[in-house]
Image (cartoon, rainbow, N blue to C red; front, top):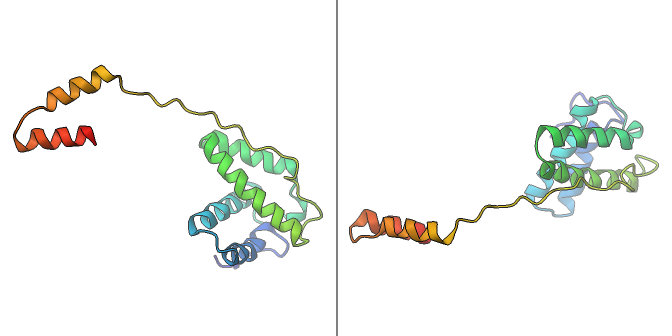
Length: 145
């Protein structure tokens, strides 16, 4: 991530330092990518020149709402967690006077019910694959797998 064309004091400019901090913590590359994505998307949502000191709770909430409407509640919750770490770090580094997310709660993620195939349907499928030639044995193995 290059720091070209960034505005001093903007969130965009600080993401470069945050990346180094995350790497120093030896977090997994996937975690770092997810955290940085949340930061970059917030920059896109608010505009690249927005000073980090002016970002408040309503700004973050509007981003989370927009993300939930554009994707899923699960994705919005993941972005929330990334921003939570970002603003915690910004407060620890003295870039902001206080963490605007300190009393925020993550978006509720409903558990999705995953349909289960009835036992009778599985039995019928296994019977349909029954046989001794290669294709039938292969299909039976795939069904059992």
